[in-house]
Image 1 (cartoon, rainbow, N blue to C red):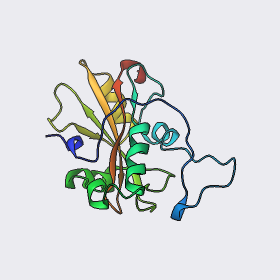
Image 2: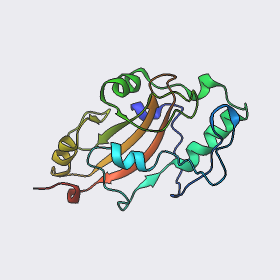
Image 3: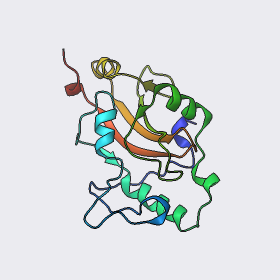
Length: 173
């Protein structure tokens, strides 16, 4: 199967929005302070991504539910920190750093890894490392789908963050 078939990637449609999270060591952030889930970081860190594109699916609600289950003790760390070795390698070599801490270990190793799947690409997709590479793929004929996965290089947490079609309008000729 593809790298994204790992048990830590739970696909479910989600809506955009902000949520209040419990801070480090179970303390709540100061009143009125909102800590957003990985959202704007995805748009900033994914090479060539177009925010709000038609057909975009955001998985923040599924992520929030999974993290809540872990924090309640219903899931063990080894059940949520199960990134495939190839995904971990791509995260350390090609990942785009985020400003968010890992939701599991609270470390600074959270990165976004972008894959594109489509015709004339390897069965496991292509790991995208630059906006130029994304634009080049967008100009090719065929339908391409982009998957953004957040991965912690410290504890191996991984979760599918976003899926969107790669459209030609992202390319600049």
